[in-house]
Amino acid sequence: MGAGQTISSRLVHPFECVFDRNSKILILGTFPSPKSRAVGFYYGNKQNIFWQTLSLVLKKQPPTADKESKKGFLLENRIALWDVLYACEISGANDKTIKNPEPNDFSTLFKKASIKAVFTTGKQATTYFKKLCAEKSGFVPIYLPSTSPANRARQKSESFLAEWGKIKGFLE
Image (cartoon, rainbow, N blue to C red):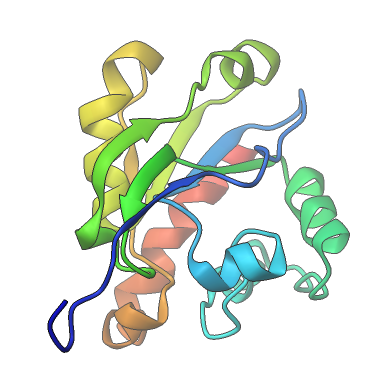
């Protein structure tokens, strides 16, 4: 391998979907980052503003850093959380390096919860859901801008929180 090249490895999604029968919306990322996998839960990179963004949009106190607090926050607010992909080859946290994607099976979730809308965070999650899941699920994903540190410039725009605010209309 030459300098600067990274090795892509096949990974299987390590977390279960967070949902219960009261969940009204499903928020999907693409696949957990290495930092999320290391801490054992979604959006574990401290520089990712997912939890802060949800808190601002919902006008609620953010959950503490522990997994149970985050799960409770999601369920109390009727939000299901998962990722589009069950398995893939990926280099680091770069969704653009994904190869051989396999989607998660959403059938149990959609049978057990009253999901009104599916939101996808970032362009790659949206693309993969449209390509691999939309027809079978019957949902057209609603795009949300990424909360990843790689999207920092976009997150400072006025429209960022307004776009995330779309989730509120489906939670009432």
